Amino acid sequence: MEVLELAHLLPQVPETVLAIYIGINDAVCNKGLVTPFLPRHSHNNVFVFDPQVYSGSKDVPSGTIDAKQVVNGFAPPNHSWNTEWTYVMICDEGRSYESLWKEKGYIEMIPAKFEDFTMLSDTSESKLCIFIDPEAFNHPVNKSREYLKKAKQKGEKYVSEFRIPNDLSGETEGLTPVFLEKGEKLFVARTDFQPCDHCWSNLHADNKQWAVVNENSAVPLNLVVAKPPVPEQYRGQLIPPAGSADSTTDWFLRGKSLLRTPIKQGHING
Image 1 (cartoon, rainbow, N blue to C red):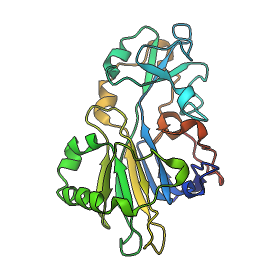
Image 2 (image 1 turned 45 degrees about the vertical axis):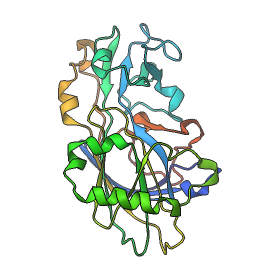
Image 3 (image 1 turned 90 degrees about the horizontal axis):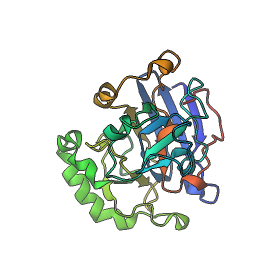
């Protein structure tokens, strides 16, 4: 463990305080998460453009949105990425990442991570229900996990027993409930590399303690390999994001009301 942080606080919703232990390197981020309620969010590829071509705000490629408008406290992944550049995310499923690579003024893409959740707690002590984009179950990783069929059945059976904080109504709408037993995993990713919404509730009347969920995350190598090379004038100056660029690629349903500054600051940025 390199860092312990308390973060992801919606000030008016105390159930969203999140404790995290983090281990990170250039390729992989490993986290242990403890929170009564994980707010709904997804990880969205970020495309960087020359501000002389697209100035940002409303002036962005069609089918995209200025990332600074949806991510509270948006930050480039490290100091080598110019804060004056225009950073956008796809907001229209009809817009492909391949088409953005061909847009005039394109500089580089910051690929969004996938995550693999593992339930570490015994459900006799702490029950937890994960809510996830149903498209996640079309991913080969989840298809290979036979126990997820039963986990979805349990999710449908027990979902009404889990509490959603009053101020977070709508967080689980349209998502599939999944009830994992200790040691079971859920892969958070879509085959089309579009954002995969997810959240969870650990608010159950029978719980004796908070659950611990382990998260291993990395960026999809096949997407990284496929993207075009960085234009020559930027190639030598950009340091790739390390591990996972959370403050760059995380898109929360209530992003503008979410305070991302940790209560206890760790030493890792990006």
